[in-house]
Length: 397
Ligand code: CMP
Image 1: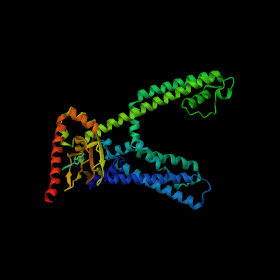
Image 2: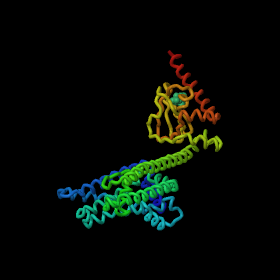
Image 3: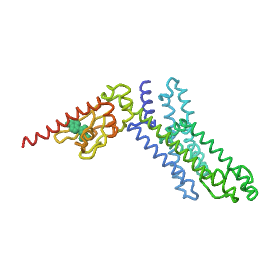
Image 4: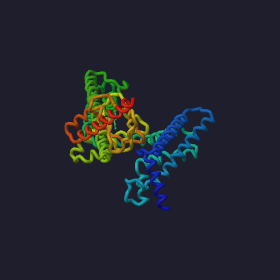
């Protein structure tokens, strides 16, 4: 009985995980997104004044329903928290407490607060409160964006560089605010009479927002303004560059790990030494395909070859189709012969492929001749097989 509960709990935990790629997980995410969208829309509309009574009632019912779904979700997540590998080794109670105090746990709790507000009828009575709930629900949208975790990691990885740019930003800000305060305080005492007032102008100018509500009039003030505007562009460009490079680096690292996870399933690769293997891992890309997906089409130009890490594909040859399973490869003939694709290839089940693009293929050919020799040998055999099968009908004629 305990084992059954644990299996059920593990299944619930896996399905509710936002990174879960199973059909159940995908269905749950779609439903969650729909409920969240409906809830946010209802809260937004409910803030409009003088709505007819029945619409008010309908919106309150939708909000209550959405809150009920979030309540059930919260309860299930709390119950299944001990299944998380993150809390391995902790007692069930401590695992649940840790989850409840995590960012997801706290956001989940805040999202069900509307349930209590609805029962006390505060939402329809106070539109400001409704807007606050709307903001709380929007936080749940964050879990649908896998890039949120990446962003947090990028900021953490680049914190030293980012903080240097931030310090430059603060130096320019305070220096500019002080200089304009000195130039403008006599002419515009209300707007530049104090440092905090000048700081407002400096922030608006340095971030290149420029509301135009506060403008320097003296020549000195305008010159400072010009320097601040140019510095603002530089600082923003630096920030953008740092974050973009950080994102690209992080994505490259994640892709590398994803490829390592799949490469071990292909015997052709595991036979290579670790150093050679790590060289090719950097050139492969992981792609997941659903069943009946056309991966390559006959007569189209070919710019890549594929290794099958998981699943199966069907090579549609004129005589009879051939199936290739885990560890097999295809698409090599177009790269070796520099000819269009010789056959159409379709997945027969969910399939994971490792893609090697043409430019990298020629690079691998130069560095790992043993691998390419094996690919060439199989390509020769396939060519002969295809030529043989083409000869049969004409012989028979
Ligand atoms: P390419 O011509 O690039 O695209 C179609 C692919 O089908 C081809 O490369 C081979 O990888 C694969 N292929 C062609 N003929 C055969 C065969 N007889 N057996 C297995 N695979 C084949």
